[in-house]
Image (cartoon, rainbow, N blue to C red; front, side, top):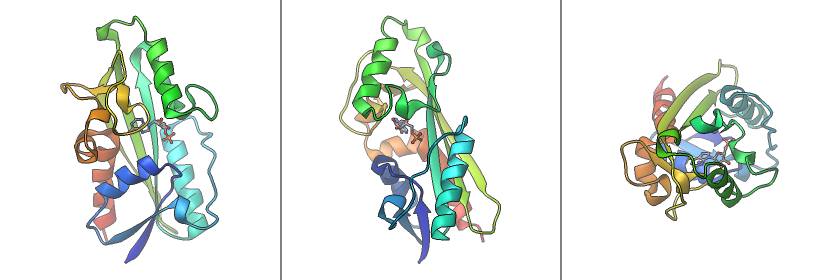
Length: 196
Ligand code: IMP
């Protein structure tokens, strides 16, 4: 089976991506299981830059085709913050819970019609000696006034997709993948992985 590296240290992201990539004849290997794989500093200003950097570094290290996801959360009332810096919104080495607490705090009192937000994921497919390919997925929604649900990760307890009454953290992995930023990007990746 052809091997495909997923350039992430994040087990939650890996689970979602792996689930969306089954049945294509690729063996999916996370970077955190590849001996000596380097951690990549996400110092780009865009999702495209960070995603490309992660995919390129891991592909060059492993000499294998590699996928890398970079995701941001863009909140209208915060002028697009936390954006590309979603992982560190509450500070260096913060937890998912710290970020949820912080976003609820800074959004306290913001009326419903100004709580719009979207997630965007860019995934780069990097193959040795080929041009990199990028795809994207996004989902529109709202930041809730309190955290709900037990599933998912990151900001899932406070993200309500437009037109639905469940936050991501109240959905199964399959339900979230069907409509999420990452799930939609992964569906496009499936087409890249089946091309000759
Ligand atoms: P990055 O792509 O590793 O920079 O991820 C940015 C941060 O956004 C993560 O640490 C999570 O806190 C958050 N995040 C990424 N994807 C999701 C998601 O699908 N749901 C909720 N939060 C997410």
